[in-house]
Image (cartoon, rainbow, N blue to C red; front, side, top):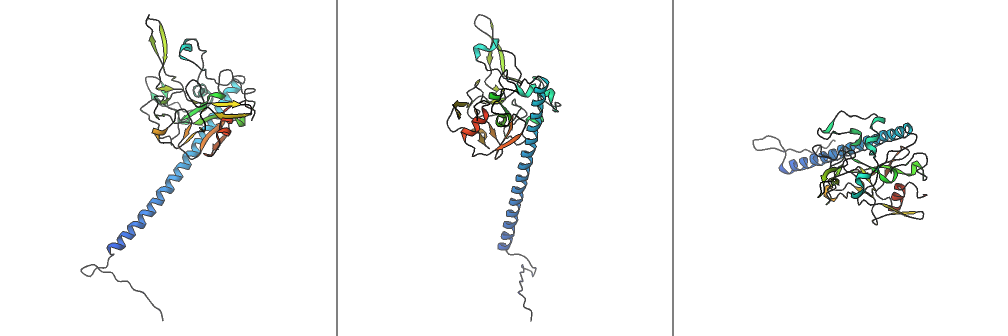
Length: 292
């Protein structure tokens, strides 16, 4: 003999319906399911952005090697400068501008019509929370200054090996963590012309723009300090920032909006660096000739 459990809910007037408690339970279940769906979609989008940005860095790596191949092994280089040296500096192009003719880069969009600053999709991380198309700071990357000094060559300037030397790290386009160095403007270095007291022209540095580098002694970046075969950061414990809030962004370091740092090496390969990497390991990879 079959047994049935029968539920009979009726509203006033004899119509069947749900009680208030049951309605709350249904809404609660739906909200939980919706929350799980949004989390899943967010994770998928994050993974998609991460994969896309890895491919962008591979594209940049190919352009760098094409540049070196077309210039007898010479690499793009940055000059270090002080304010009193500026008029006498050797001319140099930033990495990200120098390689533009050597890669398949989209140059169809200008960020600033007056300065001619372009928005290069390959240089932009769509997950970068600091990017603002209405302001300067048009790149979500930082070139390793230690690997791109003037006069370096791909054939003999990296004794630690191309695969062991960091080329580029992620870096927020605008870093406002308590310092006026907010813009990474690789081909708009940020100088303006003034005259001194007797009318002679002088060049001053505009502190609101900086070139797209890290480990750069031109600024007060954290630098690798080597002693023997060991390398440590100039500020103890500093490596890179994982998903920092904009007001916590440290302009002296690289930072990423992902859970891992997307880093391209000098051989063109792309690596994901874990947040648990030790400062000694990271900064040894920043230095091209420590012997690691």
